[in-house]
Length: 121
Length: 111
Image (cartoon, rainbow over all chains, first blue to last red):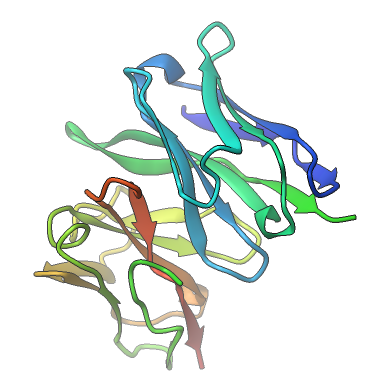
């Protein structure tokens, strides 16, 4: 069974840093497509970053240069290193996995429960 | 402002049929498939429709999706009180600086 468990959220001051973790089970992170998606309080979903199985990484313009997505294959865990945090980064952060939904079709069907990051002084 | 455009709200009475629209562009909906997610407040999004019109196992056939050109829509027939939730469309985008784009979400109220 696929499971994604995010941890690492909390209250952080503007300009600070935080590292989110997404512990995966039921599949191998290193051979998968995985993303971070965030949702500000009362707002919609916003894609943050993606890492492909080959290791390529991409970021939304709003976080480029400040956030870094990575993975630890030995721990089967996805990370999001967040630096220079701003008030507008306040959100619930979800990790998502592009998994097998039916037959041989893969799509973004698995999400973690989310972890709340609050940037405030 | 979201890349995909959805109406902010929709409503219906039990048993009715409601539709939610999602408008995009040639770089996202026009060239990639559309997913729909249902989100109960305080919980993670749940995949409702994938590949424009396919339902994952366990999703009732009251939910259906369609796509035409750069627009997509989600239809819910036989509306039930438990369908009250936020609904998001999503698609991959072929633009250089974005990858996964979402609609702003539609809050469905069952009257």
